[in-house]
Length: 219
Image 1: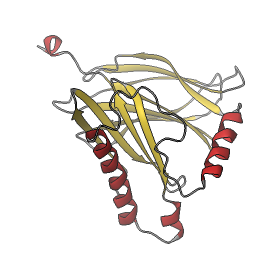
Image 2: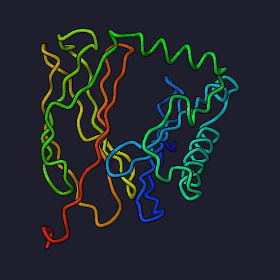
Image 3: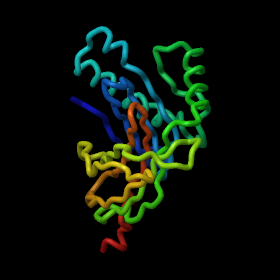
């Protein structure tokens, strides 16, 4: 089963990292993010609930994932994101929902001040070939108290290898978790850490690009 794609696209002197991920049948959503210099430049999310309802198979889902990924790559090459600094609400959204429903869902999510939030408290050594030391906190947006027992999963995605899970654990009584992971040294391509938190049905996620060792430092 294809769960995602990662591609580096060179355009007009910049390198755009395009990441597309299937959120899973429990949340039938395809998410594509475009990174430049470690920051998210644009995003596109589309639902494949229609395929699930129609009894669609894995092949159809995989084809839709690949089509969305390739569409974003083509948008880059056509200059859609040239000199783009931010993404206004609603841009690039593809959904089977009506626009009114999309707006209502957005406002509802913004109004949910008690949703869980995943924050990176410490991140050292997020460099290819080094040991990364990371501290995360899971809390609720309207409370200072952390969320105990939240499930944490850390995945590595890259443009040259299949995604893999590097770490799994749970937060302590204060909603904190500390861990170390060994990051691979890639001869080519780029990679990123996807850190996810789950508490009941709620989820939160942060992404961080893994820096390359400068050639001078690498010898």
